[in-house]
Image (cartoon, rainbow, N blue to C red; front, side, top):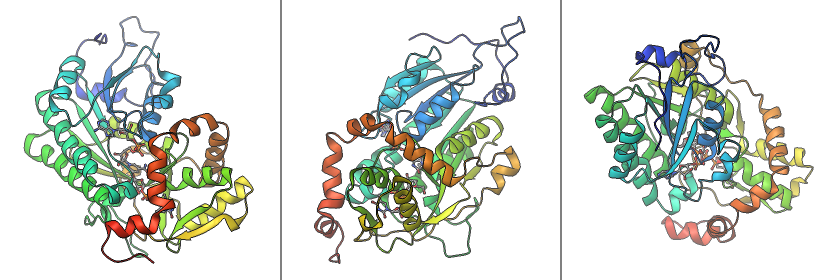
Length: 386
Ligand code: NAD
Ligand code: DAU
């Protein structure tokens, strides 16, 4: 493995200054090598939806080098990174974060300055049917990352988490970073546990850990098991659009690139040991989102089908991102209607990508969660489903 060239050792604050994917560019007119790579970032889960967006965005900054560690589960897809696959400042390493020795070898070789930890089992419905992979990756995998960090000190470790850790909030409550944790699903409980573990490594071992908690992301390259891409792809096919329960559950929608810009700001300006909420500032009931997708795709509302609710379904998420905005100046840029339309356009022009990710394993999960929904849910929860 080739080591990147790095300039003379920089202090943490100097490194951090150049870690913004879009705004701050080094002065390439200087003859002293100032334009060379000044921060090497290990990204975990960079072949997934949000991680791949982060990789593409970060490579826009000439002072960043990215090493992407990903196991390539059903959700990891190197097609998401085709545009940067041969980039001189990018490398992919296939590895499982549950393999501690493997991680230690990679870190010893790469010697990163910063880690952005996305890798996780990220789907709530799958976590209900099969909680074990969630435990393994989200808890043990994060533990392994933190243990690796103790041996190979980095200047920043960003643990990417979720607003789901706060659980369901009654109107008009909004969670700030001190809000109690009340996760409902194996997925969100795993994320809450890993958040606390990460923060404990800051308190106990003084590791430079930061936890981010973002709301629901949407945008290109999202695996079509999540609400928005599932509804878009079903609408294209004229298949039923399955709304859980009454469809009045509220989610706060954040465009994926806005999320990644926020993480870059936090790499640059965040404070160790802190938590930062990242909200999209656009709360909508699921039913409204689905109706908007039908309108954009020109499909009839008769395609909507109300199906049995998700067990333990959180009614409403709501976040305050005031701290992040105050400390870094970040705010979401993408307006939801514009973002949704461009997302639909992206899926329309990437039918081959859809066909590839829907082959193989996808169909098995799809049948379990939709075609045989009542029986399958009945088998994992004690009460019979309606
Ligand atoms: P995703 O499911 O699209 O991608 C997860 C990636 O992690 C995949 O590339 C997968 O191959 C990889 N991975 C899984 N297990 C691994 C393992 N054991 N070792 C190495 N790699 C492994 O997920 P996403 O939607 O991009 O979410 C990324 C992160 O952001 C997750 O931590 C998630 O909890 C968090 N998050 C997601 C959202 C959202 O709306 N999608 C919102 C807030 C936070
Ligand atoms: O809030 C952040 C979280 O958002 C992330 O931490 C998770 O990784 C991400 O998956 C997402 O979780 P949700 O459970 O909110 O997302 P999902 O897209 O699965 O569902 C959004 C809402 O839509 C939720 O209320 C359930 C509902 N839904 C979902 C699907 C897939 C349906 O009504 N029908 C469906 O078929």
